[in-house]
Image 1 (spheres, rainbow, N blue to C red):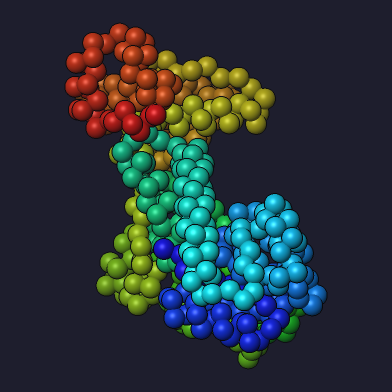
Image 2 (image 1 turned 120 degrees about the vertical axis):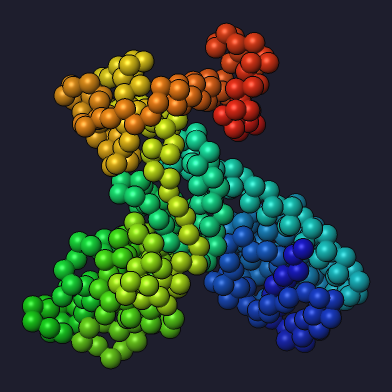
Length: 441
């Protein structure tokens, strides 16, 4: 239940009296003497109501109302008016004010109006949240492609974690899409409009690591010409993605831990502390705690980074996603290169499904591009019959069911007609492959 109220009135006695009434009734009250100050501090999607006087120096209550509506047309504003301002207030309600109260007003009158306005605000914000959630889900499905249960679980986890102010550790094999997942965690969270800074810890020479992370002042060391902002400082307000975190030198792990604990850093060659507010998303192939037990990684930093963990399933564990991913990569390559491509034949699909994909999604994208370029059949190098015929048939059957359900948006009659299956057989296959019609609606 919402209980936040902003009070804007140039008379201190009115502000004090209203604050006392509202505080005793359980409201959280924020006071302003001028409308201009309130506008500067008014947060987006403010979870409450504004109570404003009409006659004030600077911006009047009506001018203030117009500015608030420009920022958020659904934010309720209740106007406080003197007797002579009633006609003006009635006109203001036509222009979007939620209510007006004529001075002097009783506490009960004020509380009743506020509670109605807060109920309305709560419904509006919940509706916005649901719309945003649906929008994010649709965008995430187009970013993290796949119909497998593992990908569906991953998308749910990403949506849940994106809005939480916690560090995340992503575990996955080479080419499994760790940076893409990190980018989604950033894009669908409250830091989306701030920087997303990616740093591959394995690609930086150890002697340059500190300068890369923390930046430096001019002359801090030989060759340090001019001031340089480090990755930590550049990511202020946003997200720092540290790929292959297990490769970070132990000496820098200590300093990174201190930044995370104190939210402050010092550039090389400087004694000035700089405040930083950022979220760390780290990615690793090995288990960081096992690395810590082996003495190759600091255990305290591992726990600090591993507040929440996401495991990315390798491609061999979600073979039913291979046809969809291949088509996506081939289509993207064809558009980029100005080429056309043909859909996969049955034997081609069988070869793709039987491969173990040690390079995961990155390897599949390379194979798709080779086909578009006409450099041979879409067959991975060193392909092995890693699965039995029965396993390959199961994977192909699951793909066909999901593809048909996706095309027809869960319309069972259309799917049965296309696949020429009786309803009972279809239901048995859905249950065996763990598929639910609601997923495709």
